[in-house]
View (cartoon, each protein chain N blue to C red):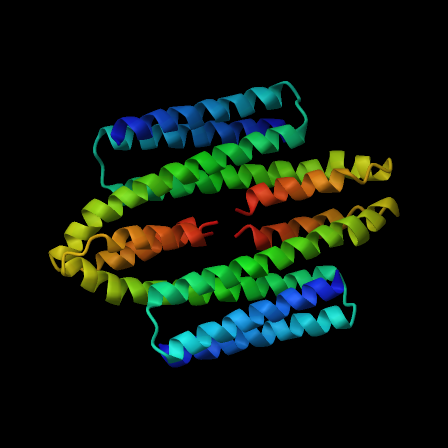
Length: 83
Length: 83
Length: 83
Length: 83
């Protein structure tokens, strides 16, 4: 998963570099906004992948050890992402 | 505005580079997710700034020239961002 | 459009009444949450329809009369919906 | 919690009834949209409360019984809400 996430992060960084170039070239705002929406959606998708992994490993382990407070941490993370 | 957007884009690219480093260092997923949520929120804020500018300039001009179809384009952009 | 929106609002109100009944019957939370997500999505879809109509009529008219401040109002609305 | 959720659901149903009345009275779309955004936000807040309870009770119990597949169900719910 690590390699997949690094690859996806590189791709988003590339997309944002592309947005910088579009702004430098005074490209039509509507087109720049479509690229920004794609970058945001890619970041969201990386987060979702990592969150799933976090739940399946760390969170399950913590709960099985009786540390149920980890649920509060999960709720706080989820609130950050549902804005 | 151009300079401000470029600065903000550089900052998000830096944040995402930081996330890559955190993954390489096997940092706690919960912490990585907080950084990803911050990066996503920064991208959203850049889009919102650019969208406001787009509406205030291009869209207003198009509508004043009678090209009201630009409203459809705005709705499509807004749907991309309200996912 | 008026009749369509009223029908859709009645449907959401019905869905939320259904959620109340599910809670009374102590139904499985996961199932209740699926219904709530559907209701939220229906409200979002009604807003999107009304917003499109608002842009195509009131906002276009205001801009054509030279009242470009209406764009600020649109941005404020969009921020409420992109949370 | 049950009583609190029922009260909140009644309030949202009342808000949506108010939106119906505003449409009947041909009120300004911008004002109707503000009320719809408030209703959507109230539904989201009810879901968040119920989801927290779901995680703290059912999900923790399932994980402690070794039924880790419940995590997939949680991820599916979260995806519905992060649209």
